[in-house]
Length: 168
Image (cartoon, rainbow, N blue to C red; front, top):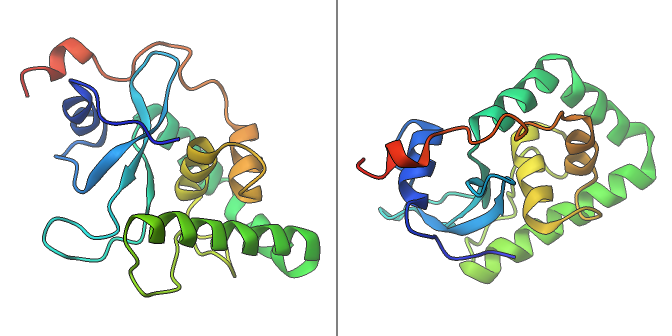
């Protein structure tokens, strides 16, 4: 469920990603500390550029830990599994279709490209974890598996200081 941006969210997201956020539609998931961890972005940016990535992970602790799993070869093994596990491949295809439907509900782009390599390969675990955090388990098998391998990235508290972002 997408929630509207709260006071200070835009600044916190900017601090998390190191730049002004673009195309924000709302927050799709918050860490237990209350800061956004996943946002929803518009299918088209403010200048009209298509942006097919609907769900975007913003928490730097989360994205760092996802990057570690990518470096350890998780994308490669999941892509190989798509070719050998018909059930996994079918679930991944369904995740792709769900992602397109969610994005098209905001604004149809008229393209079949979703994100993260769907539906034929696994290209970006960040997208898949963001999708799972946004919609919950049972929709994206790659996101579900990856999220299950992540430590509690939020346990150390906020990734950015909300008080420091208020003046940015």
